[in-house]
Image (cartoon, rainbow, N blue to C red; front, side, top):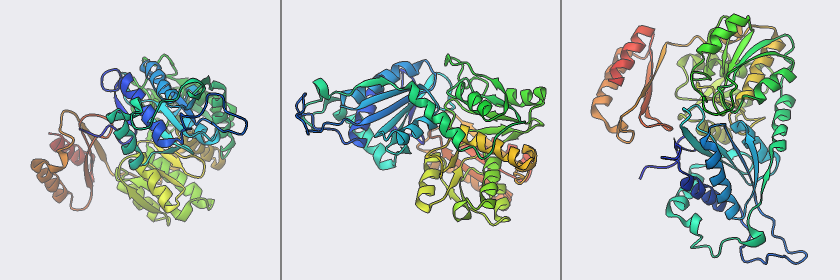
Length: 458
């Protein structure tokens, strides 16, 4: 059986691959794995001095319609295991991570499939402190959920009953603390900047424009429909074309693109050019380096980052630690090495001194704040990285498990690398979030990169 957890939680087509039954089992298993549950044998009416404090979970979601029934299943699974639940409504994924730490909760659950299309959904878990789970924690949750042990409590005695069951309450007012947290960590006010923000019809739709306005920016908002029906549909960080056009149309200083759950941030400069995660990481690394805030003068990035990022930072005395694809691996390397900045080319940026996970809004505030503080344009700040032409592959209908063992593919990769003669790279991997394979080709020219990518895709 394939592993349920991918690079960022459990995802699938809602009500087909990701069902209410699976959501309930996973959340109940997470409660048993991540919480110290009170004994179910305690009396319903404890005597004075007898403690029966229940664990607390924070649950949020993006606006997908399927999030409503999946949230209900998750909440039921948690409460049935004796966990109190705070429902914070439609919020960015990093808001859930922040609130888990801020409120001293035992775990957090976010219902979102990030940048995936509307029919998909996903379940992301956070442990105490707002941290993403380790492989061992995910494996433990999956084993319980698949075996059904969490749903039946067959091995752990009677289920909570009476006053022992978890209580559910509305925590929408608690979510305001996340906005205050963002504003408190802005490096500079944004007065005088005109910004277009693409909210991807997702979780950032209300909070992103509000926070930028409170920091003094003039904000033009795109794609802020919260019905959930059009999340990531021709918009957001995976489809920035409308944002690029709007920046030029409004004569804006910059554009910001989030994905459906707002843990990503890409930018657009005043000329309409897209600024990807590599350039954002470079400008933030340099700014932190200059302030003496870049721990060990090191950035953590994945194998997908362009070679130009490494070369540009090396010239300025900054090292790059490389990880596998997935922000969880970036976070792991940051924790192990004591590093303060890491991220992905896709726009996941982790500022470890401020947040426990990638935060698109926090990233946007720091990019725009750096512009305001230095008086430099985004194009100028991003020019530190001149990337090699890079083509990304996303090929459906292939066997993910057998991708690494396919002889024909291996031979074609070897041929391409021989032709590149060390002036580019090839990476192929199974997708962690969707059926199929993904890859990347870097080459000295766009024509070469396109041709080699097509060969590998074929």
